[in-house]
Length: 140
Image (cartoon, rainbow, N blue to C red):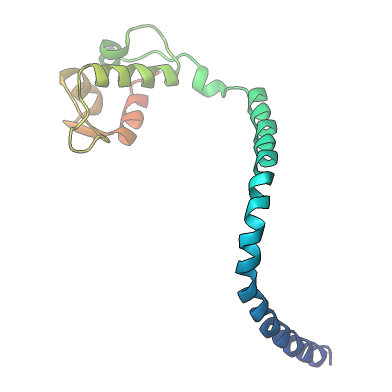
């Protein structure tokens, strides 16, 4: 019996949706009139993200990224022998790539390896996404 009572209720709701459809057609005229009100409300929204910006300041760095790792001899030829965090190793490899103009001209996501990078990559060309995986194999 409970299902029998629900069935008429949904049929009653269906005509209400049809009645609401003409109201939607009239709504664009209201939107045009409400547009200046939205512009006035925009500065209030700008204040809300400022509160969110304060929250990331409390965030601490992940210790795994900041742990100094010793590069292999092949990687040390590019970034130096001193132990560095993964983030700094990646930055120094990118400095080397840009300094020596090793990005592929046609597809900037690919890196053309020179003699030093070929030892690290194991091939002539690697994508920037593969690069971090290959570099991690040379860190201890």
